[in-house]
Length: 87
Image 1 (cartoon, helix red, strand yellow):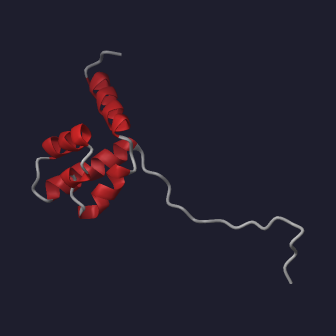
Image 2 (tube, rainbow, N blue to C red):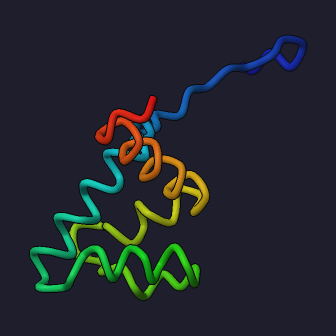
């Protein structure tokens, strides 16, 4: 019988969240596989917020929508600054 005097615990298995970099890599690859220009499509998504810029191939649209657009811009700018040695 259930003991209603104690707290019951349960666990929900969740997938680990992908990093912003991993999301961008997956989206880039999915767009390329479908024949889109990934730069144009990602910029279109970031500027407009319209998820239809991103293909649903390989779950790319769902993945990118889990990341805030400002986080995408931050990751891209950080990587650009690192590559150019401005830090």
